[in-house]
Image (cartoon, rainbow, N blue to C red; front, side, top):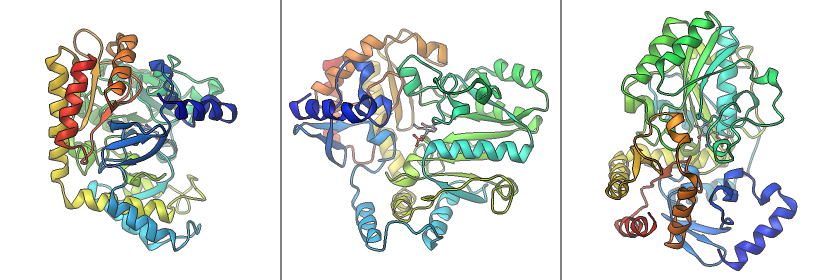
Length: 418
Ligand code: PMP
């Protein structure tokens, strides 16, 4: 941590809570001050003190093609010349909607929004409006953004701060959020049994990636598909992380399961503030102005964000070998951790080393991790020029820009740090 980052952080703290605009960025869990970033290119990120790091945060997922990917940058620059926002429809929104639907051919319609939080919040409103039921089931340790009703035993920054709920959320707002345990069928069955005919939807991260990466047990997603169907409830896959990452078609393609609704974020916007929710026409036609579920946005479908999304999705669609490359890269990182006796979970290009003994298949396994050991490992990785997420409870993201040289250096850093 150099002097300039230090000074900028001190200054930021005088005008921004904790000096950051999203909590995990403050590095509190790893007992170090954050790097202030100057720029990024490909797989590398550069701080204000001239430090260069191999980046496995990748803006928490969006930069699957690497930073400042030229076709996206060029298209965005050109689009800016035409104005930044109109608050009126453009042809490009339909182009992006069609690119998204190609990923999930069993869906019919897309609504574009500005963040993953908004996508999930809106999808749940739609599910409630469509089913005319109020209750939803979410899983402990899954994170679905910071809307009131979902800040209940949530993962990501809440887990990092050891405060799984948020102050400022009235009890009434979360009274209809029922909690189950990921990979635990009985916990879901019990909630359906106790709330017959009242569950609008089950929302799940098909691969949990906000408590570290925890894959679904064999049959778990199939079970969720069946129990929701049997009870007239909707199954919502929150694919804000997995969408366009595990495959072009995300987790629904990867696992061959068709949920009723899907939320996308991160990759879909190419690094710009853009997210989406999709479903069949029957469900989506409850959304205003066609139907009675209201959802809107001044900047929704913003032309610059849409342009970035189109270029990134086109690149992914036209070179599906990207997924083979990033998965293989991640598998080599997995092997490096494993060789050192570290527990590691990986699905595709998402992975997490866990500082614990034995397997990690549940939220309760995650809670047993030694966060002090993680913090020490994180600091050493940084000293060795590798930037990983500053929390035990986040994923490592691999991009197509990561090179053989990056891999060799990262493996060396892992060996030095564990
Ligand atoms: N859902 C999931 C699965 C996420 O990982 C996140 C953010 N990491 C969100 C929703 C919220 O997205 P955003 O931060 O864009 O609001």
